Length: 224
Picture 1 (cartoon, rainbow, N blue to C red):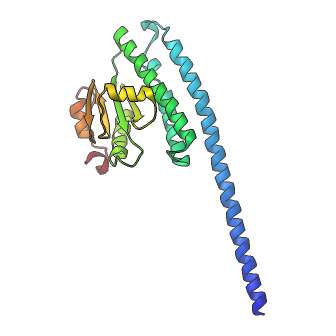
Picture 2: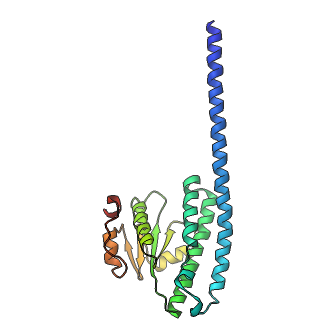
Picture 3: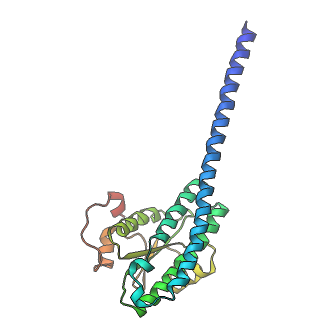
């Protein structure tokens, strides 16, 4: 009787164990398929943006608006990339590959926008944000919250976010030109570099022409 009881318990336990593994594998497979679908769409979106940049360079000032240059496509790509980082991890080779291409797109957009600013009557406010995912930047997440809040509140604010540790020659040049240094997070505003976390109150001082009084930030977003 004890033998049968032990055998039954073993069978039940094994069944539960195998079922759990199968369900877990199925969920992981579904999640991976979802991420791969996003990855494929990102690749197409990146190619489309690269083509768009080439077309925009041919436009005259009368054909260009801020919404033309500062479109929402890059922000959408950034959101998808953040999702992939959350699912696959920041060190995943595919995530790194897409992040490198995304960073190049941002730099191309920045250069194109500067040409338009010089040529046409368009003057958006530009902020370069340098962060790290290597675990050596405890304030980078909070800085991201602050910048997201500002971006949502101000359509004429353009924020370019770069992983400063990404192995990309164009990005290293951008870091060197702006003298970002090793202390992150870092912001480049109107050609001047500011190292360390900047709260919403700090940003009002750095961008007085843009930032209005706002009391909607959460405490951990506004305090150092």
